[in-house]
Image 1 (cartoon, rainbow, N blue to C red):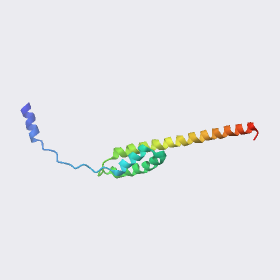
Image 2 (cartoon, rainbow, N blue to C red):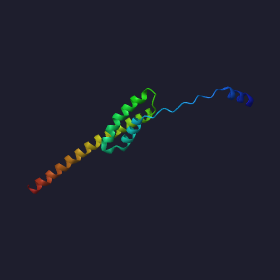
Image 3 (cartoon, rainbow, N blue to C red):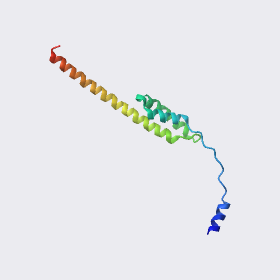
Image 4 (cartoon, rainbow, N blue to C red):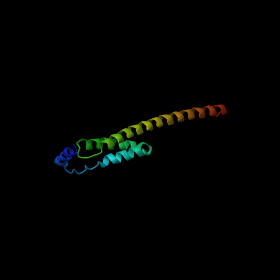
Length: 109
């Protein structure tokens, strides 16, 4: 059995060396920007860069499609959180304005 395995191993040709594909710089940049968020700006730029990186890596000449997809997901989540923050701040500002008007009317101004 061991002799048969050593013969099989000896007759199997070694795989040729393949150079690693260059990694997409756009995918890396998109991931970092979408991860940092930067008040929503990172998510906006990350969204466009991740879409561009997905196109760049689709043909297989560059690596990083998974990172581009992760950047796209993080960018969308960042933009959704930015939208929720804007709605929350607008709502809080409206409530504060109503309270200010109530106090102002009670004071007779």
